[in-house]
Amino acid sequence: MMFENSVRKMPVVLIVDFRDEVYASLRETLREEGMMVERAKFEAAVPAAINRLRPDLILIHAAMPYESGWLIACKLTFSHPGQAVWLYGAQSTERITLRQRICGVETFLACGGALPQLTEQVRQAVRRRWGTNPARSASPAAPRERAGTAARRSRAWIWDLDGIVFPFVN
Image (tube, rainbow, N blue to C red; front, side):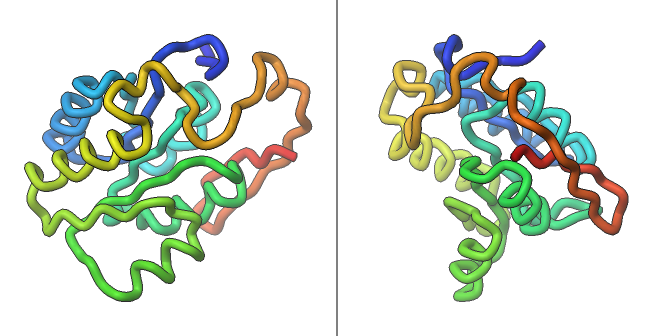
């Protein structure tokens, strides 16, 4: 079942994190903000989840076990241009800004490894982007495609060295 942005009322967030307690906390916070939340527990599940859900936002843990969140974000830049991607992690350095531009990351949330700080930063960032009730405007940045448009586009595939396939839409 594919969720189309033109017919749904709530913004969809895809969380990419292997840690159950972090996912549960972020899911609760985002649901309180009026968002629908889904999860890709590991990197290999990201492409299928994106194609199935067509999320308004992808929230990625920067230190995933097999592939960094930065690499996932770079792949998304090529396979899904214009996709809103936020990363979160413990570190905050001057190199983050350069990485953000290269990898197409809209926002980096540096939480210092503290879960309460992360959930509050996510809550504030969501409110800045969507306002206090994001269910009223599911697509804040740019109008999304109408239902069926995606099915008419041609597809190519991007392979990385680890053998993970990312669909690339022309």
